[in-house]
Image (cartoon, rainbow, N blue to C red):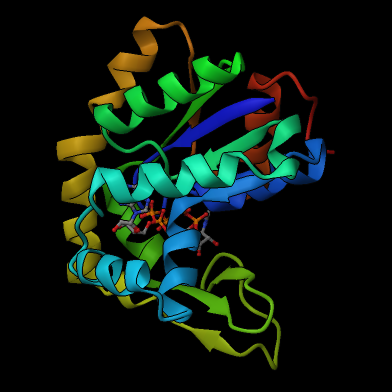
Length: 211
Ligand code: AP5
């Protein structure tokens, strides 16, 4: 299974990617997580990316394309992948198409998670991550257990979330007609509770219900 999850910041891409991993065993490849790991490790790439990320802007295409190209060559991705947060621009989508075509492994589907703008800021601003486990929580909708060591993503401040939403509308939304024209796009209503969204995502991917 080779799929892409697309949606604005806070749509639930990471949350749903984990459900697909549990169901199918294919790895989740999140460019946001890879860039944050690079930043934590203090690499040159991480430092460069941090400036863009903290301003709510997209990291340059060549940086993320290089990361994904390298990641897809790892053994675990030979059975498939769930790309979460990549591609975000048409040049990234074209680069992905070229590299998958060289390998003879085309995409199966692109799942778009739709959530109204007014819900997105709240989802991001109240998100917290457990530093030890990497598990993501929401202070209102999926509260963390007692004792979790929580951190608040630097780009989850309301004004930066607004910038990220603007970047999504300006750059990433253009991908949707591109994938629609290729017959790959599947749309899911992401404004419902996590388990309902999960059931629909698994259904459109043809891998059964969430139960
Ligand atoms: P990235 O980390 O990819 O962030 P994002 O796309 O903005 O998405 P999020 O992680 O904020 O949200 P999500 O959709 O995964 O939602 P989640 O499941 O966590 O990218 C960060 C930055 O890196 C970018 O701004 C950019 O600078 C850079 N970058 C990354 N990839 C790039 C690329 N390809 N090109 C250029 N730059 C790139 O859910 C959010 C919250 O809501 C959680 O608290 C969750 O518990 C809750 N929640 C989820 N679903 C539901 C639900 N159904 N009901 C209630 N609550 C829910």
